[in-house]
Length: 492
Ligand SMILES: Nc1ncnc2c1ncn2[C@@H]1O[C@H](COP(=O)(O)OP(=O)(O)OP(=O)(O)O)[C@@H](O)[C@H]1O
Ligand SMILES: [Mg+2]
Image (cartoon, rainbow, N blue to C red; front, side):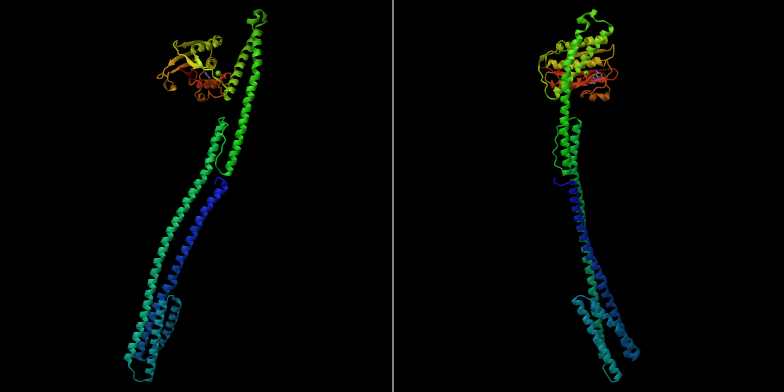
């Protein structure tokens, strides 16, 4: 089925529905035709037979009346009336013989014809006898005529009865046909509706599912994941789309790799000259060449700017290189048992000059009895440097930055860690600008920064390192009041 195009699927579905509807229509037309034929035969044959039979019976009786009056009075006017009616009777009998279609009815009409003809012959005979004036047995003729007329009307009544029964029978059979047709039509109509729904659902589903998969794939691309190759059983048009999508993924992946390669290449190329510039600036600083060698205050300030900017650039380049290595999965962790106290002190001493310059109060509160932890000291230093660097960067003059480290056992660590021996929790508190609520979810993203100078990589790298150590990192912040970044390291 997946070989069929969307057009073919829809066309096949509609064809199936059309066939059912066509069958339904044909069946209904046939049944209606049958009912129509029955109704027509009732009105044109049976009802007509009854009508003519009745009129024939009446005619026969009134003919008999005129005949009797003629016999009694001998008035020829009555005989003329008798003959006049005879014409109508012959016409009616003829019509009836054409109309009826069954042998029993035909036999009845033959009987009518026979008895009536005999009756007419008897009357004519009597009339001749009366004209001759001779004597004859009037009673005998009376009896014969009466019998013959009775026979004629009796046969006509039988014919009417049979026709009535026929009408009843036809009505019953059309009732049966009608109710069967209703049932069959209802079943076919329900089947058509159910099939239409099923076909529509099936088609919608086969088109819908691959599109949903494509949407998911597209979302992954928007998240920067280009590794998803879609193989979805789908109609050819959508398969074509999926193939184009896969091609796009490959291309994007290649471009992404090229971009990462370029950045890491450029950063690498920048690092050596930058270090050389820093060393040169250091050599030119008043500490090495002596105060007397610096010609002016301006000269001294420019040198300081060169050194500071060099530091920032070297830091940025190093972080970009770290990121490239992290993305390539090339980061090796040299884990060993270390004390966090020593690392914290080292990091703090690095930023002390900056804190002094900004007149920021730097406080260290470390639990003396902290246990050793399994860490890569160099990487952990990067985490501390960035958190402390951020705290200083985003705290204004005369503010304060505090770093604390304490042991948290299973209970006090809450849901943040389920490590057996508890964790060491390090927090960096500042009284800086804080982070806006809506920006919090994005602060760990690559290249995301909301204020200050930098690359926006510090927190991303810090989080990767903390997670690689089996710990956790989180932030509590209030805009305008300050920020606390905390992370944990499991006790070894
Ligand atoms: N202590 C803090 N106070 C206020 N905002 C902060 C603090 N720490 C981080 N942020 C916000 O989070 C953003 C991301 O921080 P991150 O350390 O990742 O990048 P950065 O410091 O700007 O650049 P980099 O660390 O690469 O030099 C910052 O740009 C800043 O807006
Ligand atoms: Mg930073």
